[in-house]
Every structure is written in structure tokens, then in C-alpha cells.
Picture 1 (tube, rainbow, N blue to C red):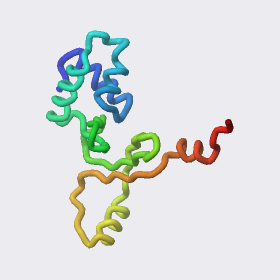
Picture 2: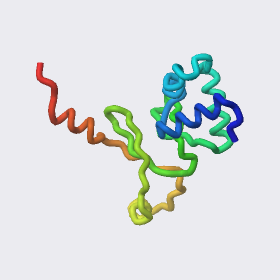
Picture 3: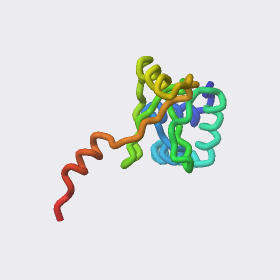
Length: 129
């Protein structure tokens, strides 16, 4: 339960972005909330994660990525630009993965990496110098 003006603003911004780091949230809120410090954003989001209001998204292991959706779900991450998109893998896909592995999956979210459409298009049409 968010009770502060700053907490409400952080949650609203994360909901708007879908996925963001604390640094991205701080930058997005800097103009409208110039007194909101980066350490405050860290504390606010840590409490939100602890309370189950937001989740943790896929990350590179160096940066925490916050996810507006707290429930378990899957992601696509662009290997070129780092963009993150929520996925809804069907039960048939999950069953096929389990069958191929011969294991029962404990659902903690699956991350698929590749190149997003924007990055693929820019590779297909390199800039001329």
C-alpha cells in the first residue's frame, strides 16, 4: 500500500513505463519532483517489491529492473537495445518445454532473448556514410 506522494508518483511512473530501473524512474520524475532523490527512489521501490506491489524484471545481473506487474509472467528481452516486453506463454508452450526437458517447471518466469523488430529493421538498413 503506497501512502506517500512520492511513492504514488513512483508507482504511477513505473505503471506507465512497464519496466524500469531506479535510475530511469528517477530521471522520469526529476522535472515534476525535483526534490525526489535517487536514494529515496531506491527505498520506495524496495518497499514496493517487499510488499508485492511490483515485481522484479529480467536483468543483466548488474542492474535491478522493476516490473509494474508483480505476478509471475514471462518476458522477451532485446539483446541489442535491452527493451523488455511482457509475454504470455500458452500452457501448450510450457508443456512442450517441460516435455523436452523431462522436468516439471517451477514457474518463476521465462525470459526469451533475441532482437526486437526495431533493432532488426535498423540492421537491415544500415546508415550510409
